[in-house]
Length: 139
Image (cartoon, rainbow, N blue to C red; front, side):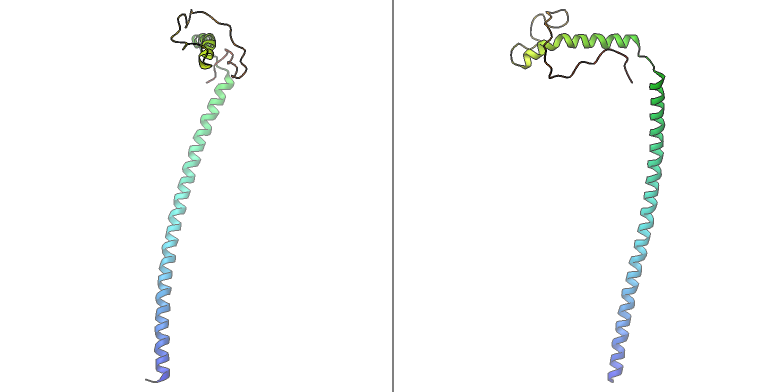
């Protein structure tokens, strides 16, 4: 074979190699295009689901707001229970403070503790948060 024929064969082989690589790249591009389409559809569906969920949450919040604006008063029985609960807590605070400071017995173990037990003067500890005032219960 002559020099030009061997050069021509090399060029043909390189051309076929290039065409093979081109075909592979085109296949990869096509696969990637389909992956992107699927991802885009998923994102659109997720976005729509989120929008529907957010709309439902907004409607629920608006209903709650409207209920709060209407100023519904709590049940008087519930309000009385809450007042008695906080009074009980206020009565037991001094005994618990002494116990927690290591200056007294456990409040449950001590005689006369509990409702109707010996009442102690409330401490002037400003380190704890104030007790909520009895009033309408918000829901």
